[in-house]
Image 1 (cartoon, rainbow over the protein chains, first blue to last red):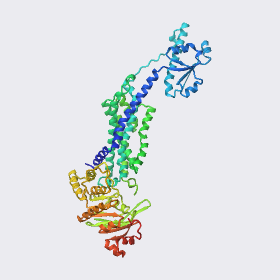
Image 2 (tube, each protein chain N blue to C red; image 1 turned 180 degrees about the horizontal axis):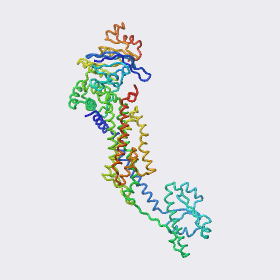
Image 3 (cartoon, helix red, strand yellow; image 1 turned 180 degrees about the vertical axis):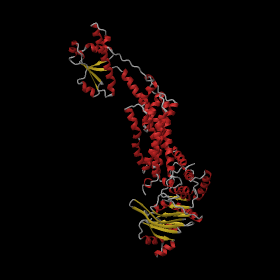
Image 4 (tube, each protein chain N blue to C red; image 1 turned 45 degrees about the vertical axis):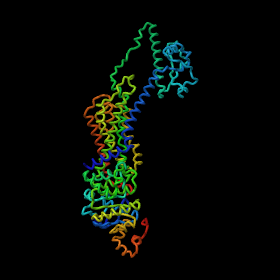
Length: 392
Length: 244
């Protein structure tokens, strides 16, 4: 067996015996992420249901100016509440989500056949305000349309003349592709897992080895340093990959518990899909291992290495956040950008789209190239005595 | 057999080693004696090819560490200043790891560990995890893993650091055994009693240079002192750092 293989086997065995490493790399992510994800989904789904079905209770200012409008609203199930003294303040203080104000001139405008102004006071930047506001607007629009049609009919005009264009939705999204809306978090969680999965091992096998004073004896053995370094990186990669696999499997078994039935969403992860995701993300595990080992080798102690890791975690987050904020259409050129490419690919795979082989090849090739460059650089660090033995 | 000629090594502005030459013969124990920071560890690190010298020449059984690093490492047994063990592995696994890195087959390693367990008296803890080992146990494992491949030349950096009296006695006994079986042993220390008790030749290093070199008797004669302790002080010119 080569030196690389011996170091690899020893690191894996040693870290499997470390409860902290096993917990951090192999259990924390796979347990925590699905629970977090599904918990959040349950919470937001139930909140949305609640808001959509809740009895709409809205204070109305100046209800006396528009008796028939108020009667219509009440007929539709809205409960009219007494108006607060200062409606803007009440909304701003979040005492009520929305307030309707009927100005004094409403009757005048109504009688003159002008559009009569009704104000809806709300703060849509508050999530609690958004749904009641939409529902109130919907009711007011319905009333406006109804009266408009009546007025036309009274004058002997067909109401359909007032609807020159009829918009009809043709929804091409499938239950699987709609799942992406919820699954948009999956690439993000997987990218983070690719980095966190091997983190403990990367630190333990470099900075930790320095701190324990076992690095110098190790380097005295007749094995080229690049092989020692590569063995450690290989073990880190394996841990990251194992963590990714476990996370995906955990999602597979947790997803049936998602509150999706009512939303018409198909949220299963088939084994085949998991396999394809792992294939796409494997090069990221190597890239992460190289980067983590590189940084942890610079550090003198476990603690110093850990302080770098907070920053490293930002790297997989940046492309994911960019993508969440500004979804783009995947194109061939994007596949050359490590991490970003895998984000897009996982999105496509989860949507159930077929991913062209050259995309997979390009993304893996680009990522592996960067990963190997980092790994080569990390291996040279092992030859620098100032980095390896800061005391000397 | 080690020959060192005019060795130099600097770290930035710090000139750690400036012109060290000595010889260490087979079947002899050579002691590098000097106060802390004299350049002993740096010299040893250049011998086991961890650091390249700036200038000078090293030959270990005819091999040059700067050129034949891998071959030299196979003939060297080194117990460096830092002797960290892998605490989640047992003593046996620690030793076996190094044996494998030397390219030894598992059966050969197993047989060799049996020998070392007997010589170094490690039967009590050989299959225990290294977590919580005493200093003495740790040093024994560090020696065993350095000796697993039966090296001809043995380099020991401050081997008795942190050991109690009994462990120190056992260690000295082992070092004498190595000498008796024809190994070339080099040890560095800042403890005078250690060289007095063990060494055939003494190389006194101060501020990166050789202050004196010879057998204990020669050093006594040269310094015209009664005790070896006075001789060291007279030869170095100060007793700073030597009175451990």
